Length: 394
Image 1 (cartoon, one colour):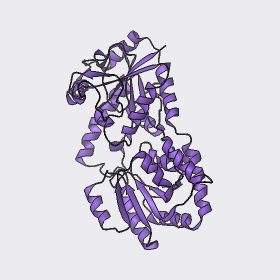
Image 2 (image 1 turned 120 degrees about the horizontal axis):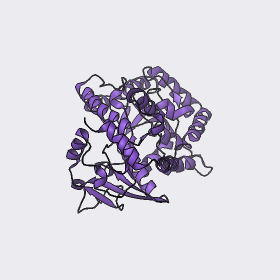
Image 3 (image 1 turned 30 degrees about the vertical axis):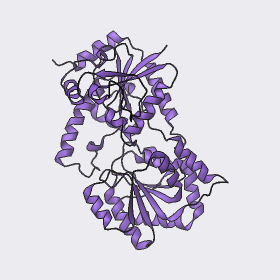
Image 4 (image 1 turned 45 degrees about the vertical axis):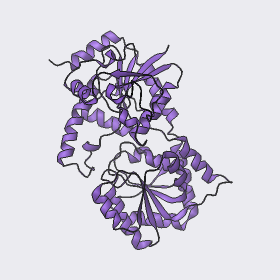
């Protein structure tokens, strides 16, 4: 039996530099399309298409596409207010409409599945938790989470942490949830294997630390800046390289005043994988994290990880990370001192991290998604009637 799946996608997330959610969309949609027993197409707003096809720079280019004759904004507004028009009107005959990026649209006949990536604005550890913007985003996402927890046939959080959040706060029934996870690109495993091979150089610079993501509130800019100051006092020659473009103005100005911080901008996954083994360690102190792919990528690439225990980080990093208190830069200084002084200790943390990362592959994520889509075989008419009773306006 072949399952026909329409991936409901905002194409802007497929034409940007592939990090985070963008990477998940590309790996999962294309991966599912390559698996036997699935026919995968893309359903997207007509205004995002180019001559009726996916943009040339889209990571999903080459897949068949069904246009939605509504703008992205109009479609979201209509589906926020009610259940019309059903999205499978625009991709008739599909078995599933699946959004890999938190887009909700009701369907009349097809089953619906939706991947959940984050709960940023609900996290008290988010620096802007009490701002007007955060309150607005919480209200908007509250509607979204309640809707999908009531109406979607399958909810696919990327971590157990997120699943617990949805179950406890929004009443998601566990039997309608499958944790699909995230994977580590093969380039990171290959870079780590090369660094550790007998023919590899295995060299690293004990005077360089790495930060990935950017200098912003959710990625822990406050903690990074405090650690930079503490490290400068203990190790005058040690520097911190920041890879990423998600920088906030205030953090940028603060980094410019610290000579031991250097911003390297964006690096592709392949470039990042090659660079990682050459550093002493990854400094990973996000204030909010719903999964933690950066930590796993570093582990796969033979780079020790100094991590905080906030939100989903401990679940994902497991026993592969050296945990520090992000509020106590002295703990980071002590960890850096230990790694610099003892190459064998660093090698032990590299090996622990590699073992941890080995359990996180895109193939494993695709297997979980495949089983989830194949196992939901409830009669459509009965299922639809129940969902309509829950979500139709009275």
